[in-house]
Amino acid sequence: MSTLDAEFVPTAAPAPASAWGLRIEEGRALLRLALPIALIALVNMGMSVTDTVMVSALFGADALAAVAVGSDLYSILFYLCAGTLGGLAPFYAAAVARADMAERARLERIGWVLVALLAAGTMPLVWFAPVWLEWFGLDAALLAQGEGYTRTMALMLVPMLGVALYRTLLTAAEQPRVFLKVTLAMLPLNAGANYVLMLGFGPIPAFGPTGAGLSSLLVALASFIALVVVARRAAPDAARQASFRQASFDMHGLLAVLRVGLPIGVITATETGIFLGATLVAATLGAAEVAAHTLTLRMAGIVYAGSAALLQASMVRIARADALGDPRAGRAVFASSLAVAFVLGLAVCLLLALGAAPLAQAFFDASAVGLAAAQTAAGLLVLLGLIQVAGYVGLTASGLLRGRKDTRAPMLYMLIGYWVVGAPLGLYLCAARDLGVTGLWIGLAAGAAITTILTLARLLRRRR
Image (cartoon, rainbow, N blue to C red; front, side, top):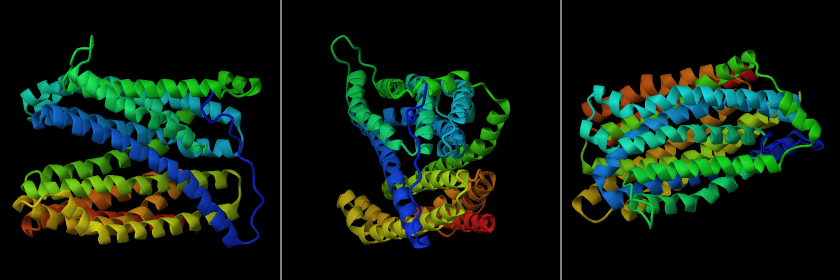
């Protein structure tokens, strides 16, 4: 079977007469690729918000807390696995640029082997989470209440890793719109299945909060099946099909992908972990602080979709330029990616700064807690904007390095920036300097700045 984009063969356009013309062309190509990737992230976020709102509204805070344990554990492990699969992207983008069907077939075979290995390693961790998490002091009653949901999350890992592989290959082939269409189709299915499976309908029994997990599993299976069906319909000609049938498994190729992908997986999982840790600390600071942090975190997820999309788009474009042996295109990708990232990061910063107070006031009520939360959130949203100036540039620089298969150094920079500097500084400002949740976000901002500086320095050295 081919990938969805198997018929895609890039055609070389005439090179613009000037370096500026080439930069403008690359900037446009970058934005065309980044936009659907960002929309995919926002749609996925919409499904997550739908689950949270419906569980909370129908079953209360206790049920939400029970399913949150399984959801958070699943998320961390899935991001680790999906990031690891992302190690295929620079290799696959290069194969697409060279129109090398045999190499694409070999990489796809490696991808499916990797999916099987990752699923086998992570499914038991989620399935038995209600047992082993109790050893760490978590409430046994809470774990038991969320056991059904957690185990549906374990089953969901298998189709979702297949979906993640398709997403990686489609992005590397600069064809993410196919994946976007499938994801958009799943949004209403997710909401409808949530309602039916949680409350029951006709012969379908009510599963309670576990129904949200069953709904997610159903959506994952439907997404995977839809991608497989579209892939078969987009099958290439007989010669290309033969390339996919004849592809053999390559252990050296698997290890090469893992060397690139594992650091990406660690980066993705630990980024999730730093914000999860900030949430746990914020939960001890009082209702107003938690509310302000929650609003800021939701906005962070929205604006992060743009910077993460630029990361993937810049990775694909630089890998393509290098594969074609085109140094002019490589220089144009380098310059245009960083310029677009800086402009967009600055624009997001200005929007958040100007909209911070009105957004916070609109989000919270006029009670004493609401007014305190709005005041705190307004400051946090300005901090979030400042983080985006560094974050957009830093993530794009990381994408350019990933496109050249340089992932271990960015992983170390992120660990140093966020965990060695940012987290201790945030905790110090929060507790010792009595800045509360604002101190935590100052630490996150410092971590983003340090990570960006180190990543840019690495990128400039590599460019020379």
